Amino acid sequence: MASALIRHGKHRLARNYHQALNAITAYNTEIEKCWFQEIAQLPQNNPHALFRDIYFQVVGLFAVGRYAEALILAMGLYENLLRYFVQEKVGLS
Image 1 (spheres, rainbow, N blue to C red):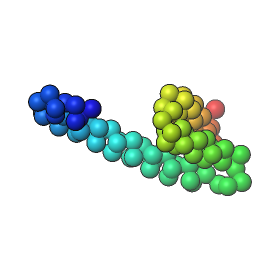
Image 2: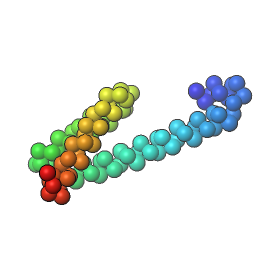
Image 3: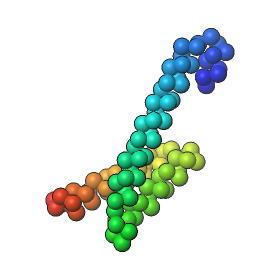
Image 4: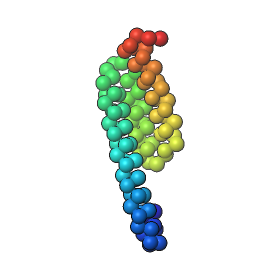
């Protein structure tokens, strides 16, 4: 994409495209670190350790370019993690 922009004399657009792509990549990397830290804290014998497995499925789907499926799975995982932490850690139902 950027090389096509450069060929057509759109150097500024190409630079902006690269900057946006780098920002998205950095943001995704940060999210991935946070997810991994949260999920890694779950005990191995906890039934909610399933979250850890789902996390790795999400990462795998992103790795092979199946973004829509990964996003849907990640949204479900996020919702269930929130529910788990509210119920189990805070004591609310």
